[in-house]
Image 1 (cartoon, one colour):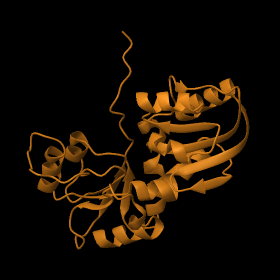
Image 2 (cartoon, helix red, strand yellow; image 1 turned 90 degrees about the vertical axis):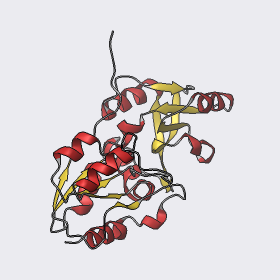
Image 3 (tube, one colour; image 1 turned 90 degrees about the horizontal axis):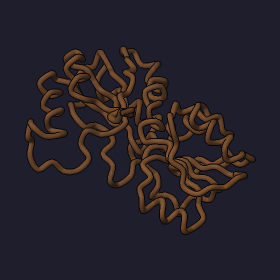
Length: 242
């Protein structure tokens, strides 16, 4: 099976044209005509993963290894150091990022992981209506996402609507019409803005909310006549207890 066939299959399920203008989903490394016998599905690649994976492997990832324009290929700096490793081993990469968020990942986390009933969905934002108590909701989120703690902005004792954007979605705050907005990477100024406007935000983590990418993409690829291996994602952060 060629890389082109796999690219077309992903595009059929999650069109690359849906990606945001700043994104770089699609073919990141490789050649469309190359034959592919092995696919590794993962959130991100790192040096260890590249070194331990066979030559000729196609990586299907969530986060593109190249986002902005590269002005130099310096093997000592990211992402050139990883690109050089991949090219030496004739490995390739397809990224399904903001297009896949819209078509698959947000909905999967909202419904299958967190167990919410979807009442409405617009690009990048899933929404549910119901009734949740503040503490009960936080305990539910911690358990389902495996979070040791939560960062919360604002407080509403009774919550009648919940919205979610996986990854880093605080910039969408003004588009969210819900009592509580769940997303990752909430910055200080996002928090101060939310408090001033009477909003409630819960930081559910970038990695923690997107680590299910492999499971969802693996399901998309399962009918292809190619070996697809789902590699558990690695959180770049660790919690130190001193």
